[in-house]
Length: 306
Image (cartoon, rainbow, N blue to C red; front, side, top):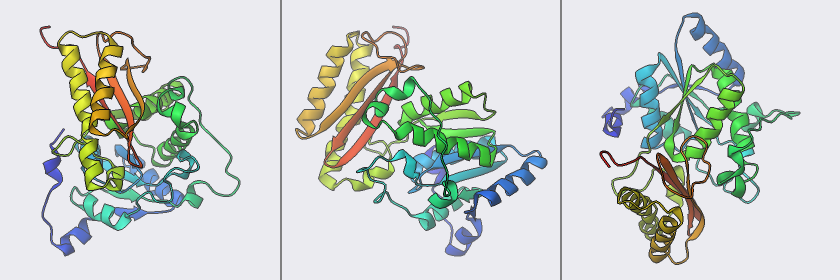
């Protein structure tokens, strides 16, 4: 995948305006445009997002642009994946900035429907994927994944995407979407792209803007603890509880008030919890720094020549 530097280009304002993706707000219009493109034999790439775009999102759009004829980025803060008391109302909405950012890679369409357009009066359908949704994020946010799978299926149907691109940062979400695609025999392929990090290691997230400078500094321990887990495994440690205790101690040393929802070591395919770190392992964590809940993960593979 191209480095994120590929999206840092210089345009004057007139050029940027000309290169902005075509904004579509009505689902019916999006569907009509896709129908025309499909008749031309175009390969459609979809990047589902909730907007407030950053270079992590841009890396997905670049991957789509490299592999597909037409790229659709969706920009929709989906109310059904937020529980009462979560940050739906304050989640950043900045569509003009998103359009300008996407102009740097000449994305074709930005699909930005309203909640009423996606969930009109009388809407009463739900997509539920069992198993992998019942742990980790699903345990802490029980209605979350039903909202995710329902809106993603709607986006798949509206865009008839040949390939949809998701970030590794939301690793469990990718596993859930992949399971939905497999179970329902959907024609859309799903591709996971690597986590994009800030220079200091913090995983890029739209929620990072909630952090104060001091909280952001403390949040760096999430990635450091994952690096420590990888170091321990590559040094021969296999007991997951020993590794988890070390990570927990690191996090609480950096921020004694941090709330650790989970530190989980799972099978990279099923997320089934592991007691011993053998083979490919995905380490996932969710930690609240101040009032901001952050997630991160690392895929840890056996050390080469070990």
